[in-house]
Image 1 (cartoon, one colour):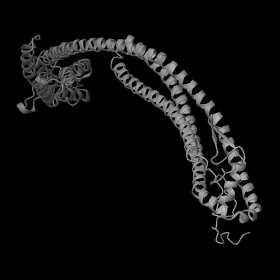
Image 2 (cartoon, helix red, strand yellow):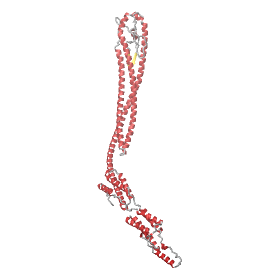
Image 3 (tube, rainbow, N blue to C red):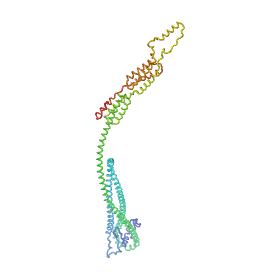
Image 4 (tube, rainbow, N blue to C red):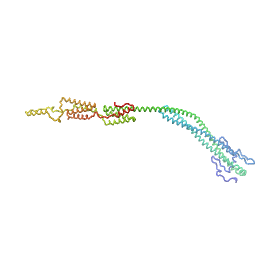
Length: 545
């Protein structure tokens, strides 16, 4: 070592270079680096461009006599290396940009087609649900469109998956290319920095070399070690560049594969466009069919509304006519037959029928029917059949009612005559038995000869039958007269103390309480209201029959 060698070295001088970095060269080692660089000339192949390291020659070059050694043309070589790396990166960038743009354009067109198909599908589904009941043909077309849409959706899904795969691969390629570009730029930067350092210090070192030839001889050994380190570093750089070139080849293959996939996708686009045009034409036909179905549905709805209105009018008029018939029937049964139960049932039926018609014009009729039902609520029909049966039973019991016993019916045995006084007394007693003097309030039943008793029983039987006939005919006057006459005959000619006679009188008193013609309400209110409504609405009248 010479005493002129710099004593202070940077702290990074002498340390082994990190992976992917150029070994740092100190000020004292730049001359050795320059000398070592003259000995070898490695060639780096980067993307079909051969770059020669700056300062490398085919062999040691002697300086021209009488002057300083000519400096190699170092300014152009970094530009060549940077230009080659930048051109390769730019070509890769353009290729990636073109593939990505085509993929994005295809994805965007596919999304627009999917949106249009979704929108048309929603419209077709809405139209299909609206016209489902009107046209079965439209439903079949909607199902066909849905099937085609599902098939196209599945195909578009496959295309989207393939585009996504291509995009992912492109992203991976971009990432790796970016990383390689960064590494190449770093290498170029380090080489440029080394060249710049050598360039800046070469002239000074040449001047110092002339003055310190003896010092250089001493530093040959140290320079050799430095040169070997630089060679190792350059070998590592060459290995890294070889690895980079090895990775670029598969990347090119992948890019070519992506290009072929993209071309295949582009070839599928016309077929998809044809399918889309077919779907559009089918949707247009479906729209026309749906429009026709809507028009037909509108026409049918109008006819249906008119039919419903006419049907409602007919139903209302029919119910009103039925209610009018029921009201007339109730009035006939009440006036002619006095049948309260039947009249009430007919009015209740009429009220039920009117309640099922939501028409405010029938409110007056409903109110009149309710009022008539309220007036019939407290009435009861006379038991015609029961009264007639009771009279028949009473007529049959006439034969069992006894007549009063007469004194003359008892045979008297005359006592034996004793003397004339006894005989006179006996005669007087017999005379008194023949003539009986009584007050009027103490008169008993008139004497009825045995031959006349059967005629009296027959007359009483006929009188009870007359009362029974009056019940069936609802003749209140004849009924009351017959009951009164029969009671008078029983109390006059029959034994009132006999149990059979008392039972007959009690039954007659009960039968006499029957009212064959009770006061009936007037049903003219619902009749008049119904007649007025039918006259106003063109129905048949509900007047009295």
